[in-house]
Length: 300
Ligand SMILES: NC(=O)c1ccc[n+]([C@@H]2O[C@H](COP(=O)([O-])OP(=O)(O)OC[C@H]3O[C@@H](n4cnc5c(N)ncnc54)[C@H](O)[C@@H]3O)[C@@H](O)[C@H]2O)c1
Image 1 (cartoon, rainbow, N blue to C red):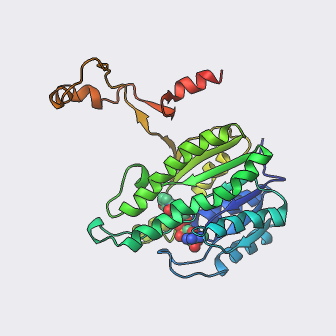
Image 2: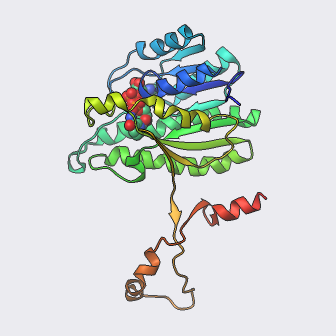
Image 3: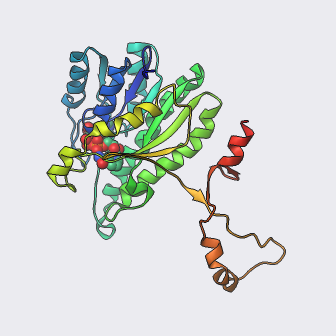
């Protein structure tokens, strides 16, 4: 069965270029009416330009789809509300939010300025908060919502020169882990994509030949499936791009449990280090104090 978004409305942030554009185009092709948000600044978060969002709206319309632009910054609290308002005022509902807008301010940590830190956090993590905070009451009220957040291999595994970006991208996992629980009762799923694609963000670190080859369209199928009604999983991190699809997860090792009767010392920890750090039999968790296995069993 083809996956359809007929009758649904999607908001994609940072959809004026790169990955966000590919998501917006595929959703529109599948019948979604799309709010195309983009501030239109440069890759470092400077400036703004309405033509980015407008161009993608024009492309969607030229292909027979329906889209409307929004030019707000995700980093503004009111901007997030305006995007959701644009969806409600224009189309009367909102089913899908893809938090995709992003910038880079790469620099080795000893040279990182407060502004480099704050700007990256403002766009990635606050920029996801503002949009979702506005969308959340809509999702709860209609008992339906699909969210995809955007992390990065830098946020999952780390990358030299990206302390600000890596930390902000790891924060997406924290946001997802809480919202997947708060949304569960309302049929709101929250998953996270870790993409790889040739875009203007990666242009600085990839040779042009690779940029041309790693099409954002290789990531879009994973994101489009995650925000479809067909996907009911929540709390997953999916890595996609460059001809690869896989799941990444934070897991908890079995460790050892000496109990609380007698307090151990550092020498005891040293002597038992191999067992404490072992990941043999490690498992993902659903929430603090509950393994995913137990959670799934409790659901029947
Ligand atoms: N390209 C990759 O390989 C890769 C890897 C890991 C993560 N990511 C993430 O994927 C997302 C998309 O990146 P991309 O590679 O397509 O880059 P891109 O620069 O092509 O697209 C990002 C878009 O976000 C917009 N944007 C930036 N700040 C904004 C703001 N404050 N408000 C609204 N829009 C804003 C930009 O104008 C731009 O159009 C980002 O979150 C990025 O960190 C990309």
